[in-house]
Length: 134
Image (cartoon, rainbow, N blue to C red; front, top):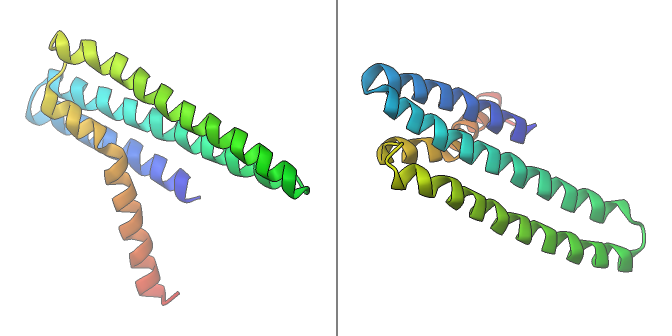
């Protein structure tokens, strides 16, 4: 539920920031924000999928030794997945920056979409807890 909220908030942030880049700066700025946001949201979604697979597969076994073995295997898979996502992001970002197809500032704003979304969801959740006393 929280992950879904973060992804939704990330999409909303991405759309608002992209539109703001278009209206207040330039189409190239909007493209830069959009490119960075899509990269970071995709990476975040893939990370979530890997962690869900890790926890689900480990908890599926009743035998403790099998849980340990599967946990080691899935942990390794998560680590490899992380570095593959990092490499793909580098391969995508390199030509965008090298050929100046993006504004660096807009790209950084786009890459900040997930932290902004996590912060927004956290503030909303804290507000609900404060207001409802739970």
